[in-house]
Image (spheres, one colour):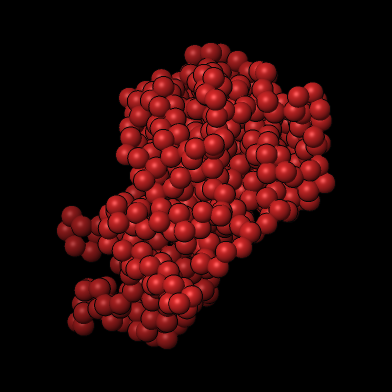
Length: 538
């Protein structure tokens, strides 16, 4: 009988996995299966975390802390959308053992909270803060607050609501009989006292009812990091963790990448906060940057999903920046909306000659290579869709290497921009190459297409950055057809496929190479020449 029951539960989990593949948004059937599985594993406490900023860090911190008590299962890799709850719920397994489930709930629109509530009933609901996020759909901070508050609909009887008392909107929930609060500035059930924030991280005393429960120490950079640490430690305290267990749990913690992550690149310090952006998060990153020594160079990308308030919120960020941090050496804006940040900064007195805006990662890299000096601190902040991490990874490195080791000079007929047909420019470069010459990827990227491609013959197309594509044509043989490739990796061997016979000067074996940015053909030899010169490509 037990075996049959276990088989049934395993079958249910397998069926739910199949269902999730074809029901949009997870679907009501999958949500019902998820809730049923949690009902079966009712012995597992469920902690749900949401908020405009800090929820990922809070979630990972809490998993590290509670691992001192028992096995923790929870959201990883920011996979916080409502149609993916089952990915973590079904990891609980059928065998009853001491486990805790910690989930991060992303809320982008009015449809998300009801879906979460239909799938997950929580024992603890943590709300970190309310900011200007997803205004394209939620319209205002008040709209964001209402959707976060809607998660209370699935808080179990006797459950706990843990909220940030320093947030003006969340603070209104302190009157809820289920509420416990945490904070720094306002009175709260859990307070952070004796807060210290510097280049080494943050430290504070966790205090409850006047008694110090633990000294919290972390290498997370920035005073804003106090809040996820305080939220996680407060919740861990509710589960009985003492000071020593918290110390061990914090030692185990590893932060998510690209969230105020400090690294080095050649002789300067890079502050990578490129996973997401909103006005509050951008401000926190700027404050964190100023805890580090060195000249400050700032790259602020567009903050997306802000709806019609986007331009005004960008402009206000620029004004605040100019008033609080006039010593920033250079302020770069990337992507269209960043122009309003620069406008606001200049209106508030920031020198216009120390600002520059671009929609091109090539131009941004070029300007950064010219500007950065040993000892500088460079902050990168922008919405995830901008992929500013591409710039960080290529900073101080060549962008593109030659596709052939012994680079031949192109013939006049094969030069970039040559007119071989009336009114039609050549949008690539033809490099004379004997059949069988190894052809290498010009830069790190992802192969998007490989195979026969009409007049190109056998060809490989590679995507670099988010808006840059290189193409290698007339190959005799292709050896890499899919997946990621590294700069200099052999992708095929040159030939003459697709080259018509009897076209005079054009009829010779060669490698045709194209480079396009936002669909516009570029001359790749500009980058090869700099690579051969031994300097970072620009």
